[in-house]
Length: 357
Length: 162
Image (cartoon, rainbow over the protein chains, first blue to last red):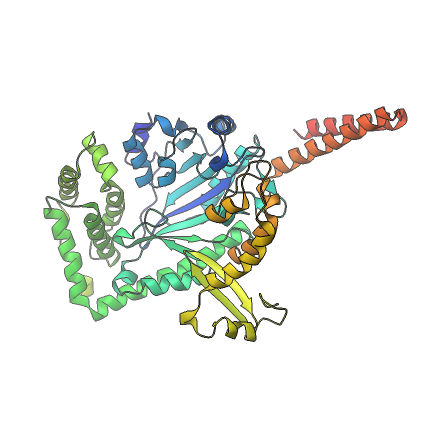
């Protein structure tokens, strides 16, 4: 059952169309139950009690219709890896031993981690940029759970969390951004420093400490206390708008100053994707990033943006093994990954430079 | 705004990112010079923080949360608290940290209405029951009857809202 949800191509609902620069929007709420130690300090029996209390509280909640729950113990290594690659659970949760669980909706728009660093991590995610609907969904699920459970809450400090950096709203709002212009023009370090000063964090694709393969970055609020949820989202949004402007500016500038080199790169990327026979995930990510960029320039048909986004996930090691139906060695994975990409890009056209000549 | 180290007016406002964490510090001209703030190349806010923490430390080394057993040392090392009671126990060392970590130190977000009212109900019931028992022990039956009525009203009220 769980396997089926993970291997489904997309959720039941029609996914919004992929847009330039912003890949997806996410909100995560950290919550803890009253009178239980936080997971890091809890005995297995206490964790189990929290787990069953939470799962009971979630039944019948609007916003969690058609969801299933599963204990992390019961998942295979591969299933866990796939959940991480789909950004549904954290690498930390995939490593836990006992007493942790996951509640996931069929359309994969909401995934709740139970007994990760906090008792509850309610996560809602959507393609594109859409904080208002993501917040609405997360808020609804949160209130639904709270109607049956007492949260650890303090009038002055807000929702109490294991790490004081999540205190208050317990909210981490983030977007996944595709910033090849800023990376290629070597402006990314400067940008990271500048947004850091505004209390906004920049991380790689898989969160803390991960590389920014494919020029994909996660941008999120660092501060959770002292501001309302809407103020945090507004501040993040204005930073995002400015990042999008800077990214577009960097792209235009690259196209002006270093036109042939840039077109050569994007063009060869398509060639490589059509002809590769062995490819590692990092290289695949970089090629796909160039395809997405070419699509944003209008040099590739629009549908390739969505394809690139899907492939960003399907070229990850776990997903390649999922499609193979078994765990396989890295060498064999590189071969299978290449086959997948060749098939997907078989009929991809060459760059259309008519509007850019 | 006062200087982090002395009581003079702070004129130098410093923000530094260390391991992805933002640290803010306000200093007066003299302390800023003494700490080498005027030369950003040689500056490390962590040195400044360490000094402040060390002063606090000597006073707090014995802090331990009785509810979950988390010690101040553990909190300092791992940065994680063990339970809700830790927020009371470690409040003195937590407050200065929160100040540098967040946009403010007062929660301005969502209020969990259900939890709040249920907790308030439990607490009111608890204190009324305690008072009732005291009244009974003192054989103050008039007071006891009054408290019993209050308890009944509170219970009915909570049923009505559910």
